[in-house]
Image 1 (cartoon, rainbow, N blue to C red):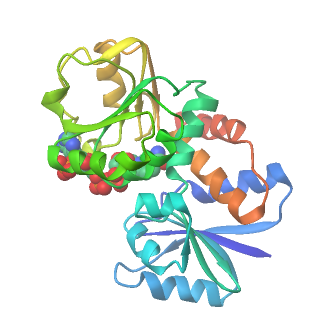
Image 2: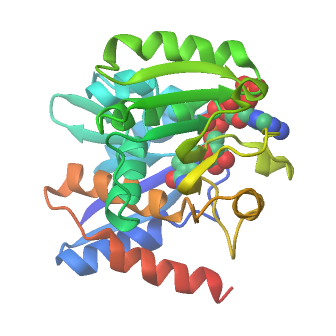
Image 3: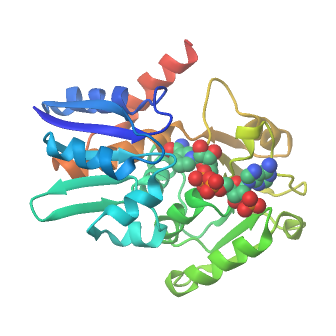
Length: 277
Ligand code: NDP
């Protein structure tokens, strides 16, 4: 049986084995997908062992996405742009590295949440790996404007500068949170890790244009704090990042198996599972 896994540290609470088992059932594919804990200093060895045992591909999560990037012998354009790899595919002639996070985000926004991103004003909060991975796929939707705002403004400015050659007609800029005062956006995406410390990015009021969506890459039971705050500040709609998680998995599955699962029913089932506790 073809073997796949998600590799990370920690990994016990990963939902990926559940998601990929659901995809396999839905598409009639026969495969095994497990969770692999790699020692913090032992990522490359753990990958080599898995591959030697016949493993066909890996999802890579915290904290190994940069090491996975370095390990890949070939990389997709979106992985190059992200500077990080969350999907490895093992072939006879090497290791292909891909990054499906941004495509998963775009698919969740445009298909599951039915939000057109073209000709819209987008705001990305944060300038870390998740933002970097999202930029090329978001620019591919041809928004009018894409603003990156970060606690450390210089990192947002540097990212905007790096991606300007690929922005086409989109006006891309980077700034600090305070510089957002008086501006309005149609979609605001929280790609900071602030919630991991029980915090929120401190934003000026009134960022949400009429009908705007606030999207939190974090997820959990009920509304996240970012979603609650956004609703209080005038966002018309809110969503968390569970759909992004499912859709990035669907992209990886498609890369490995050549068939793209339908993420929506798997997302609905996973949501029920999480809400049931
Ligand atoms: P990084 O560590 O690379 O970046 C963290 C970012 O958050 C930085 O821009 C940092 O700002 C900012 N930040 C951290 N704490 C605060 C705070 N208290 N207030 C304001 N800004 C803060 O993380 P990633 O980019 O890899 O991940 C970001 C989030 O996205 C995580 O919560 C992760 O779980 C989520 N994610 C979700 C996915 C999904 O499938 N749903 C997929 C990938 C990521 P500074 O530069 O100033 O330090």
